Length: 196
Image (tube, rainbow, N blue to C red; front, side):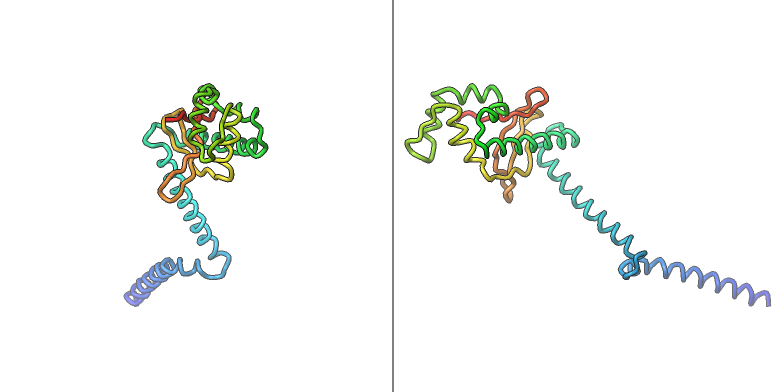
């Protein structure tokens, strides 16, 4: 009789163990059922997967942007936020044709270079509209700066150094550069490249 009780106890333990394992192995199938208790883990996993994909995308952008320059992710995020905010302000300024407000976002070196009549004359010869002549920095703003950026969207930034950044639109495998920024103090200012 004792032997039968031991066997019954052993069978009971094995059955309990198999039941527990069977329940554990059907856990994912349960999550697809319509009960609210089953939905929560699936939703959490889905949200986690989206977060992981977003994080992966953000990390890829970060790595593309820093170009092996020693920039922390926090600095990158802060710089990108500041630059994108500046671009939003510039878009508003350009839409209103507010030249004086625009000047506050341009670095001194660019203002000096593009105020020089010789440089403006050289640039005028490169314009697609023949006979159009730029005589001042205001003309540069009106005929070149605004039209070349109107309706354009900047997606990412690219560091050339810790203080020099390009703001780009990503198009397939190509970066279309719309702005060059130079950090002066704690402010990002637009640098207008000279004519090569």
